[in-house]
Length: 588
Image (cartoon, rainbow, N blue to C red):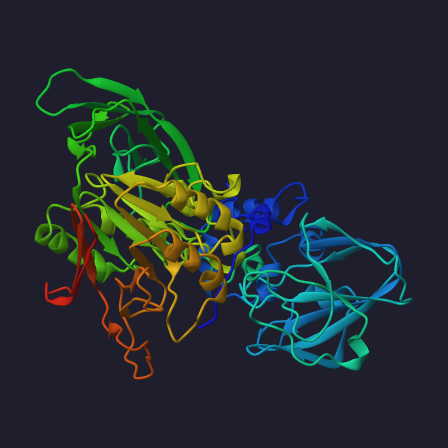
C-alpha cells in the first residue's frame, strides 16, 4: 500500500468545489472555474436538473454552459507564462473514458508517445506555444483521479528559460527525468522510461484533488442526517487545559441566526451564558442540505475535577441538558480509542455497547481515517451520528488520516468539525498537530499525513524533552513496523525521539487489522499498537515481526486504564470478547 502525502501549498485550492458557497445560465460569464461552477450548480438546484447528472456525458453537460463559459473551462484551470517559445505536452491517463473537450478544440494533437508509472499509462498530446501566457483547461467533469500533468520543452535549450506560475499560484517545476513524481500527494508514483522526444522538458506536477474542480458527472449526493433548527451533532473537544476549559460545538440549519450555551456546576443554581461563534459550512454538491451552521464556544476558567451541566439555545429553542467533567490532577484515568472508522454505520451501532461496557472512559482518541472522503460533509454527518452517544459528554481527540485529507486537499472540513489546541510546530499545523496533558499523562497528537515528519521533528523533541508526566502517549495515522510499508521518514525522524525520551505507547491505524509490537525490541522502545474500527478483508498475506501479536479482525474498541505507574490496554470486539490485553508497568 502506497503512502500518500499532502503538501501545505495545496491549501491554496482548498476543496475544489466542496467549500464554494455555488444558474444554470448566468447572465454574465464567470471569470473563474470556481465561480462558474458555483453559479451552475445553484442553477441546477433551482431547476431540479441536478438529478439528471448521473447519466450525462461530457457533450450533454457542455450544453449547460455558454460559449463564454466553455472558454473559462478551457483556459482557466491552469495558467503560467513562458519566456521563450516551447512545445507543450499534456500527459493524460489512457483509462479516462472521455478526452477533455478543449484539447482538440484548442489545437492539441495526439502523439505516438507514452509515459507510465507503476499504476497509470499516459498518452501524450502536444501543441506549440509562443512565449507568453499558456492557458489550459479542466481535466473533465468526471472526477477522474489521475489528472493530467504538463511538460514544457523549450525550442532552444537555454539556461534562462523560465516558467512563471499564474494559477495555481504555487506550482512545482522540475527537470523531466526517470524517477520523477507527477503527483504531489502520491510521490511514490514515479515516471519510468522517458522517450527521447521528451528529453529536455520541464515537468509541472499536480495533485489528484484537482479532479474535483469541475466535477459534475455523478457528483451530487444527499445526506441521511440533514440539519434542522434544533442543535445536534454536539461535540466536546479541548483547545486548552482539560482541567480548566472545555470546547463545545454543535450544528443547526442556516435558518438559525444565533445560538448560545448556558452552563452551571451540577447541583448548583448559578448559571452562566455564552454567545456562540458561528461558521458556515458549504458542500455545494450535497443536494438536500448544502449549507449548515456550526456553532462553537470555548469555556475557560472552570474548576478542576468538577462536573458541569450545559444546555444549548438556538433562536429560543432549548436543548435537553448535557454534562461534562473537567480533569483533575490525579494519577489515575481511563480513556477509549478507535482506529480507522470510515464513517461506518455498523461501527456506529456498537458505540453505545462499548460505552456501557466501559463506562469510566473520560475521553476518546481517534487515530485518523475518521471518514471515507474528507471533502464530503455527508460522510461527516454519518460520523457525527455515530459519535452522538459519547461526543456530547466525553471529549473526542483525533488526528487526521489520509482519507480525511484526500488527494492533496488540505483537511479543512476536518478542522471545521474538530477544534484542537493552536500550539503546533507552525501556523498551518495548528489544530492538526498538538499536545495535551490529562492527569499525569502527556498526549502528543501528530499529523503525519498533511505535513512531513521532518517539519515536525524539532517541535516533537521540544515537547518530549519538556514533559515531566509519568506516561507519554503518541498518536498518528500511519503505523510503522508493518510489512506493507516501513515508513522510512517516521523511522528516521520520530522513532529515535520516542526511544530517547521514553514514550510508552504509540497508537496508529491505516492498515486494517490489529497489530501490537515493540518495534526494535530495545528496552527503551514504546509499545506500538495499530487497530481498526471498521471492516477488514479476508486475507492470508499478513506478515508481522517476530513476537508481535496480531489479528485480522475489524470493529474493535480499545480501552486504556492508567493507575499510578501501571498502564493497561484491552482490545475487544463487538461481542465484548477480548482480542488483546497488555500492560506496561513503570518504575515508581
